[in-house]
Image (cartoon, rainbow, N blue to C red; front, side, top):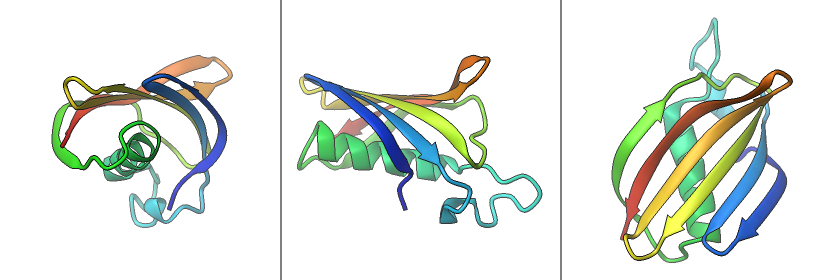
Length: 115
């Protein structure tokens, strides 16, 4: 299940998406009961979905590298996802940022090798 896409800006080998993470997404069920947060596996799933469909068609996951989860993503968050594709290295870099009234906070980042 994907978040709601609020906007998309694409240039060459990069794309920036603004995503609304609705509280009703099944990813939040049971993760965790008292304080639901978006699992890292969901974030990586979305990176692969948007990265392959928008920047690297036909590519598949090979290896994760340098993945960092810095801030929890709570239900009803507004996220910005920045994807950069390096075709020469077959590397997809990503950065999720939480968009809040007080500013932007990096939620997670990393690189995924595709083949």
